[in-house]
Image (cartoon, rainbow, N blue to C red; front, top):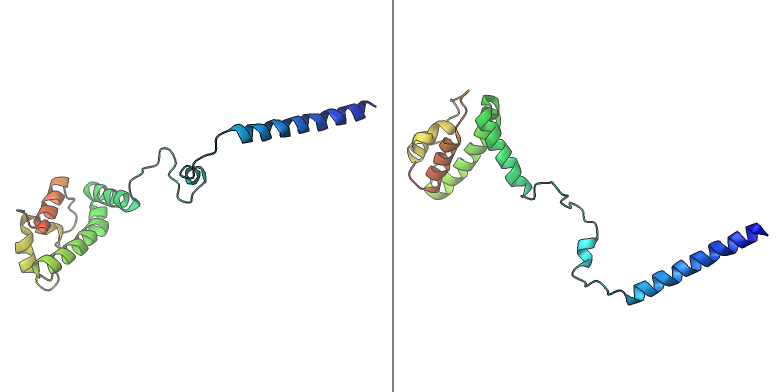
Length: 142
């Protein structure tokens, strides 16, 4: 008899809970369609504390900072990237082939040429030297 009463109490509690949630759902305002995508979990969601900048920008910043701290990173990672950038800019904006015409490229880049020179090793650039190279490639004064 006690089991029967407890069973009915569980059934009654479940029914009351179901009715209350049904009523609250009918009375509560519906979410606008513009908010629903924000509530769904997304792939690639940016969690709190994660850098919201584009991944390529963060990687490039790490490449530059690593190249200014370490000779090895400057020689193996930063210099090849700078050479690819300079090769593209010099070819498209100045008509100079970096690999075939290194003298013309050196004249166009100016004092920042050592950053692109493959014979220079074991030297870490300063941020102002990198800025001077970018300025020279943009067509400003090196």
